[in-house]
Length: 95
Image (tube, rainbow, N blue to C red; front, side, top):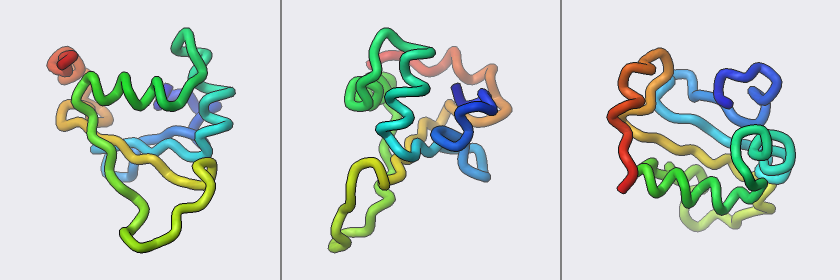
């Protein structure tokens, strides 16, 4: 999903490769999720990430009005989910 060039505008690693960002959750849910999951629900995707100890990195500063969910960037990280280190993926376990 993260390495698919066709979806790079919706989900991609950050420049450091230590986290990834999802943009435009509506398009991501409609166009990307069904290719990899049996659902197209962004909340379910986030719940699955949480089950594997991924953390959401808050991109909206406190006190700033939050806009439409479509315009928000959602950034997630896991210490063992790093670009270019596929050998660490086996260490990511479900809670």
